[in-house]
Image (tube, rainbow over all chains, first blue to last red):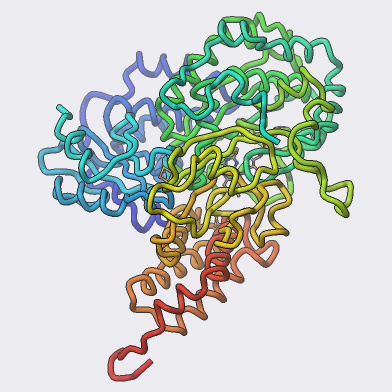
Length: 175
Length: 447
Ligand SMILES: Cc1cc2nc3c(=O)[nH]c(=O)nc-3n(C[C@H](O)[C@H](O)[C@H](O)COP(=O)(O)O)c2cc1C
Ligand code: SF4
Ligand code: FES
């Protein structure tokens, strides 16, 4: 149950803002794109959460409350679902999230050294964000690109055949 | 027997990854695509299922359940929804075969989906694709849109109405949870809940997604369907290997081709198609182009870590559905091979597996939740050189009992944990003993 006990993305801030996260136009879009796909409104929940996180970068509590109201379930039900999944964040994260694989194929091909190198370079460990808000580091299990091990996702982009040597260039090239 | 004409990689160059491009709708149709669907539309749905049963196609998602049989389990339509959930969660460590199909020839799977919907009277299908497959999802969504635009799905579907409804296909984006690959966890996730596997029965065929009859199949399983419908079960069975001698006829054989993945220190890692029943040594030698310079074969996970490990003396293991009994592993699994070289410690591998399971256990069942974390702690200690022989005994007992008592856990994740750790312990016991061999002072007592 690591998702409860070790969740590094756990919320620390319930700050609110006056502008809603689900503007009427956004709700219309969800109503059109996601809701009709499922026999229950709740079926659309994960797709809605993704859409919000893609826009905001993370899932603020207020946004989850608004989602609850939109879907017609309780905020606790939204939080229950959202916190189960590793990809959802409940506090702000860096401009780039690095998902570095550490499963068997990647470990055999050198992910331990790679993780060490990245941590040393950025000064952060698993689940942490650099003070300048540029990078968040996640050590994750197999990302399904084992033929190019060791590999990592930088936001949505896959980088394969990484090494302590070429990872510098990749990180330095990011604006 | 080498594979002359690939089935699944018919439009995709084998090996040379750099040359791979997505085959879009027009290209797919130009190379004979959707002919099988047209054939299926003209068939009586029950005849499609009969053909699938006759082909003895076994599920490619890991469990190897006969697909035709699964399709025949659904009750007759009663007016309510009926669903297909396509398992594109592909999160088993070392497994990366389905992504190739999605990324390069998505319409083959989509055609298989349409045929399955037609055969089983399913009105709505969802492809549940793991969250980490971003690029793949974009490709898939585009291909699905093409299928809607070209009258495979939607109001103008060439299949007409199915189950009294417009046939529809949607992409469902997962959000990072290995357990959602387990079929009932996938269904929970589809319903907007956390991915907690369900107690069975009821089975999904009777009460699946949204409590309605549901078929769940793997991407590769469905991608194999068009070729079977187009060329017939008899043709399909000229591929792969027949039922071994002495095996009862109700046990399905290993017919057809299979996508194999190879990762680890080989010269040419990647995804390759070959007959079921290829030898591990041939896979590594011919497709993987051998071990990298200076690397020597020690062991291999042959089907994701959950199936257990093949030892040094099992280099010639035959990769078919019967591998379990022959090689002391759980089964064929995903047939994606991780090659472990001599210079990698098996203690480290066992620890890696335990970490994976303790992280991915959904937490519902005590043996799985506690056992995997306990094993991880023990293995961390042993790997750090702090372990004792008592730790080793405890670990063996733990790994040997998890998931082995039927009904003590809800899903197969616990069995995976057990097989991964137990087989490594059995086949590489000496490495563990070496790690704990030195007597050591702990406090004041010699242990
Ligand atoms: C813990 C666990 C994880 C699984 N992960 C996957 C997966 O990622 N992809 C998959 O196709 N099947 C996975 N399966 C197997 C599915 O439960 C199911 O058997 C399969 O999707 C059925 O499709 P098939 O009959 O076409 O193989 C998993 C099973 C378990 C117990
Ligand atoms: S066996 Fe493990 S993963 Fe499966 S339901 Fe039980 S706790 Fe969850
Ligand atoms: S083991 Fe790292 S991507 Fe699969």
